[in-house]
Length: 483
Ligand code: ADP
Image 1 (cartoon, rainbow, N blue to C red):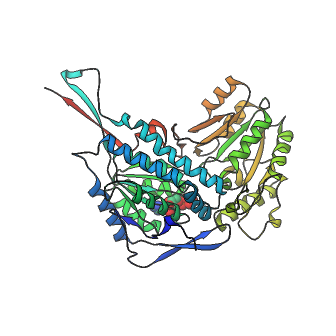
Image 2: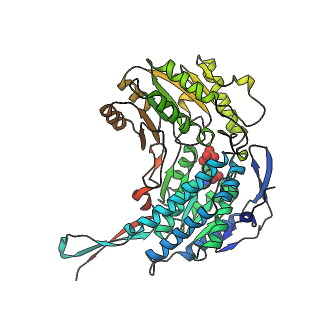
Image 3: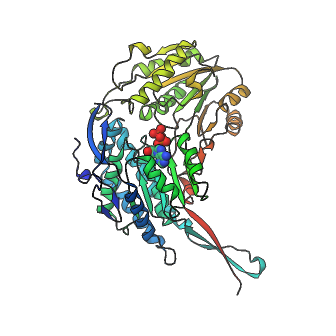
């Protein structure tokens, strides 16, 4: 079992207090590197989730809102607590997710960055009076907190994803009811320990519920006291939330699946493209929504590029992330492993070639999937059509710019994309043609707290990060004053 000063309580947190585990029901939390149970977290009841919503409602202040200074201080305190406890939060994250320790600790810094960014730009949420005086009135625009927000996060960035949502919610003055993924509740409990000890937020401002998604999701969707949900996860669940909240016309911020194209033209710096692809693709074991999923390589350079990838991939180490010098940890669970294996089998059966990695029949009986490169992939293969969410690099060949823009867009998703070329005009054309919320030019980098990030098409609604993200949890209210 995991021991940590940040995990002294293993319960939900409602109205400023750690809760009792009312029903006594729990669910197991595993370390995917060892397959062992490391904790048991409470499976909370519908009544407890309703109590969390009520606590949130009691913390909402409309007629005497929390001042900008007060909200800034909450954000700064969380940022500082995360930075001061980066090692321990990262260790917990590594143990329940499996990503390498350094990467896990880097994610804590990344999370702190969102609180930092919001604290530095919160002034943008102050009311302002517009310069014109139409209709003989003075027009003031206020940014009101939308109300209690349900924040639902996935397991692939246990601290990063909540940081994106919570920083903007707190900046707006919105209380929240937070539900982590059942694979990774411990990092969230650690965050609540830090907020409990190191911030002076009013009771009910942040509430933690864990357990069955169906129970928690139902309360959050049905309660009229929760006017907004911010969700990151699968498109399937995102669609369900849209349907389940349609009756009340709730505001939704959704960051859903991706199927990122990574395009390498023949005039690109191939070594830089290969280095960037490795950094991008194997982050979090290939389990991020911005990981390159389809690698389009110009046919003239496909062989050379494949060799460059193989050299790099063959040098990578796979193992338990807690042991320091490991490039790649395990996949999150058996279902995740089986999906990557199925994609590899399907591609090889349909004619793809193995450039690096193991054949499906040689894979071990654990969750460690070796980094794998395949080539001659086409649109009939599962790895082209679906998000693989694992360390499989599928290369498809192309000839022309138009053809590759069309192929890149040949998906319902539109989250992240990447283009590598030495031709600036071509890069501009391709970026404009790709219907993706993020398009890296000669970089495989993903989001950052300072810039907006989010999906086009079925990849979501809304933005996180940047000024756009800061405004997600407020509603503009316009007050024209007649005399
Ligand atoms: P992933 O495939 O990344 O696990 P999911 O969409 O299944 O993505 O889960 C993302 C988050 O959404 C998790 O916290 C999960 O428990 C939660 N979730 C799943 N189903 C629902 C639902 N019906 N209502 C609310 N939350 C849900």
